[in-house]
Amino acid sequence: MIGSLILPVILQLIGVVVLIAEIIIPSGGILGIITVSLMGYSLYLVFTTISTFVGMVFVIADIIMFPIVLFVGIKLLSKSPATLKTSLSKTNGFSSQSEELIEFMGLSGEAVTDLRPAGTAVINNRRVDVVSRGEYLDKGTKIVVLAVEGNRVVVKQV
Image 1 (cartoon, rainbow, N blue to C red):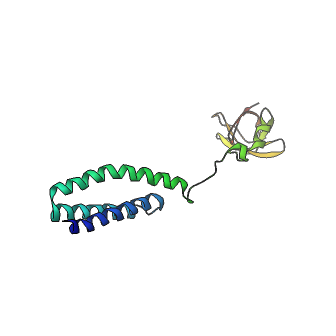
Image 2 (image 1 turned 120 degrees about the vertical axis):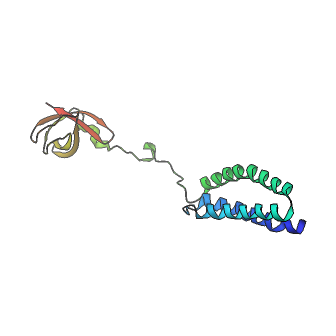
Image 3 (image 1 turned 90 degrees about the vertical axis):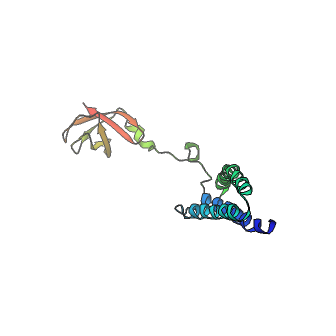
């Protein structure tokens, strides 16, 4: 009986290793299919060659082991060189908003394209992508900047 348990246990252990590899290596699910196949074949061998009781012990062990392995795998992934180690913050010099856009707050300019409601305007002798509050503004319309929200410059007609 112990000799017939060696292959299913080895298949289970290889399945655990492949499951962790699935978490770390992007494989499109191929490693996940291999994991399920290894575990399934292991269970098949236990149920058919040993006994139903031992097969149920293996199933219960798998039910307990899978969440633990997933948790450990995710922890390994966070320490993996494949993950981003730095955060993108303003203190590190990263910003999604262009710092110079805030300068346009309250300034006047002129629409150089029709604003439908998005378009381009010249503000402070610079071309800027702008958006109106929803209204259509013709080319050449005098505009004023109402708000700067991220990279969005909101304007209205003067």
